Image 1: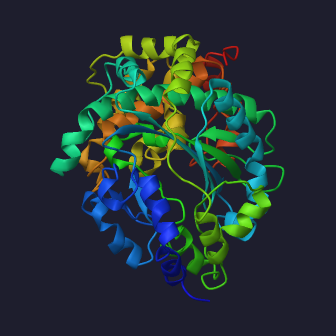
Image 2: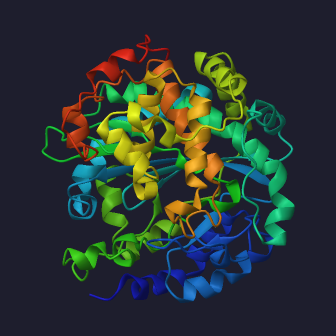
Image 3: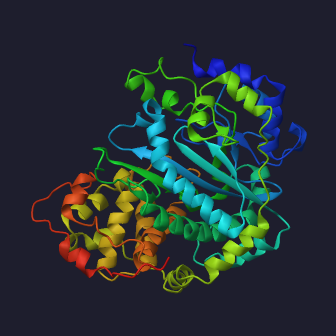
Length: 464
């Protein structure tokens, strides 16, 4: 079997497919597209040097690469919701048994459709290698943009600046709106998690958290991945439809498991007039993918009217009050996480003592946040201490923070995890020694008992 990059080239040379690329990039031809930049990312750490002007599209296509477009756009604010199947025990499961993995996601996908329809939002729906993308946009002159800017919390750290003048010139207002959008998308994701968890046979979480074993024997879950809202807008990208999905080949997963030459090619496609079985068939067949490109528009739809309704629902929600309290209790602190080591359980101490990379993982930040909240430390202060750890060069972060913001990352995850406790979405049922051990975050069980810590956390009636 030919390498997927070689197979993709024949698709990329098709005139109809090229037209779909231009649509998704925001124009009718390459000279008119509105995206800030494009790149390739599967299996690679995103670097500012790899972010190319859209004029470089022919160059990337000629190599048969996976191509992503920036979420940063000259004419609109893009809204993105990413759903992904994650398996911690069998990472090839989504490629070897795709129908099973996508059927497990169906309760979440149906809930998303119901929630978006409730607000009158009709997104572009894409099928990827491991899940789904839902994308829509808000034109830059839409009043909802200004409303999102006013929602942004005043303690939101300033994002890391790009060294590209073209990106700098376009980013400032969008970054502010993106910050407010992150709060609204957290609200939407929480509603989806609450409703879908009742119907889904595996855990549903906001971001890819380590989970315990399911009834199927795997540690597997569905991630409502809103992590992009914890990074500067200009650093985040979204996969282009009809382009190659090379992740298992480029990150070495396919080679390690001996399936490098047996896996069929995978293309990201719009979920257009198909059921999941038919869509999975199309995405591995270059001819059927090319045929779909002749009839499936992938222009990102403008949905400002629906977003006005969603924003209003968020403003009147208990979560908005929790966000405002987070903002009001934010104060500068000279404390650091190490000052609490003697008072914390062994698992939490180990995460703090080995923050690279345990504290970088969402599950590590969640565990630390739970323990410190049990000590009645305000979430915003917890975030500042995590941020201070991320900025401590003694932990040898190397180029981890080259384009990302340690402050934004710390505040985003701490806020999301503490919000779920304070609004009743997380009753911390898995905050016990057995579950933490199953999740892979128990490092020294001697003389450890998490029950007293769990008992000190607030138990709130669900507010969604």
